[in-house]
Image (cartoon, rainbow over the protein chains, first blue to last red):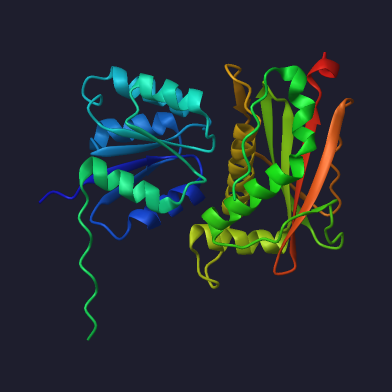
Length: 132
Length: 175
């Protein structure tokens, strides 16, 4: 079975590390990009199964990146989870209108990201290490 | 128990936010440090208490729009190393880089400002966050422009101070 690819687009290396650690217990390949422009390049090159996208970034922010993803026919079907420092109902609605599949704030428990990813692309848990 | 969010009817009500500011800041900062770092903080005391003999790092994020404010998160440099290791999952023997430390302090300031912004939401009025800025040095003073009110609160984690400063701008005086 093909290992799902997840693209993390966030300018914060620390946040990318937290998300990658949260997903490490499940079978997936993590790709990283530090802004929207690099994220679009990575999405075109690797065709991930899911994108986790930060809102506030230099070069190209989350809203602009989401618009670009949803106007490119080959990238449009990829589900996008917005990950943001804001918890703003208007912004959440705006991002859903632009095509985001889900919206998670950074102050929510990282476990919620894993649950959201599993519900969208059905990750398999890695087999537990066997004690010798 | 979470504190109910303050929904302002207009920017003229923005002074209301200072009435419960310490509660909002306590709720926000304690929750951010717990979620992002698994660190328990004591409730804050008003005032900025830090060791002047030690270099400090300040992460700053501006709020512009329905609420105009500046959020500063100030920690001793040695403690910023501990925060970086905790957030990035690095072992004690692994080397830290300055960009990684700046990234962690900037992201903590960003998440703190983002959560605070949601506490002070004005319906149908946008409010945007700036990208974080980092300052480091021995004797740093953040000076506000005319009209800004400074509010400082100090949290402790195992005797390490975390100072949060909130500069609020009165929308009417801002002109």
